[in-house]
Image 1: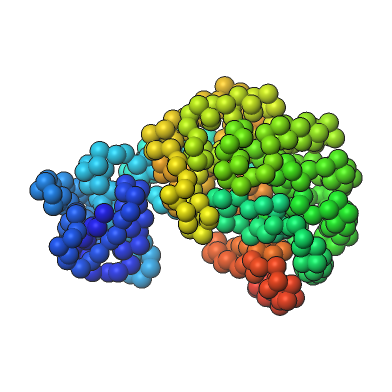
Image 2 (image 1 turned 135 degrees about the horizontal axis):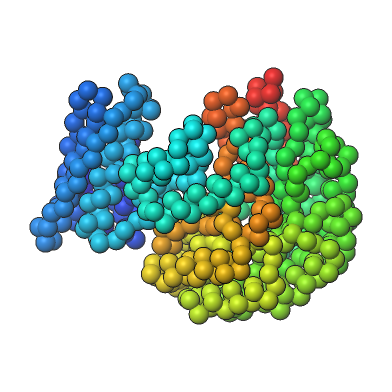
Length: 498
């Protein structure tokens, strides 16, 4: 679908208009140059008077000559610069979405939002003291979010503030993400730093040396600055892909170098691949008082697991879950993915039925996203996935199932190229919500990333400005430069915590 945008000259509009068009059409290209090949022409008019900006958009379908029109205007508070453009962009997006919805007869429940953290909008209103009904009205009128999605956002906000009453004050603390970049195999949908661990022991040993160095240096800085740790999250890759002895050394070091580990609110270890879980590794977790883990089936259909490159069996998932429970793990998360290749409502219903036999403390329901560098995206023709209608039916099934079994939604995020323009939602039993997931999604505090491919998110405590910093994704590069990257992080932390 080639769309000719007329009446807008600022090239900065191309990206946001492209993202919204992608919600409606599989393959979209936006051009500001008149083209005979364009299938749609959208003519914009912008008018400004007395700090009020109004926009009109007229969509013309070349094949039929049909036309659709929308208008919208609101006060603009900024006098110029980036903030002014941001406010005008919202107005333009508003009329653009409306004419595309009229043309396609397709309603976008998240409105003009294409970012990944919708609940931040509601938190911002809440922090500013905006009454609930007024905040809802603004979300609906300005962003065209439906009542259904605003209800979901409100339920999540309420749960987060129940679980972390001081959510708006934790900016003076930090959380730690520790990345272990190894897995038994790499899944077809994955773009995380994940390298097959077989035969790579030398590389693993070198990586762990660098990781230990980073932990020691960051731990020293935290102690010197008297900065508290809110949560620690071991992710990857699969942190349980390393040996039980290596895990034991890692957690022992954490207790040695990090301040007040016994006062950290939550420590999580991703044990996402059931084929990495052993009695010895569970004993190590128990030894160091770590009882929140993730065991991720993704699907309970064996053919699906084979298709996406997961080499464990459905039976192994169930066996390892029960093993973890018997060893004393009392806060287990499981992940399911909606829209995996070859799966529809029947297969997803089967996964929910199997989940019901286990009843983990939390269940994260992801909607498949075609991530740019994944095997699945690079070879799309090999992977047949459900259409928009069936994907939405599966999300509705998840909502009903979690409600019927007393789970509550407590965080959500969205991704580019996500099936059905839906979302990923974390559900939990009340009181078992993952604090780290709340921290990373709502961006209320600095998160220090340690390890290969680990991303740090530095958040200014006064302005809320966010700066990203990532360690190298490749273990070889990381092993060569971990001391350099550690120092860069510490330099930035010294600016945030003088």
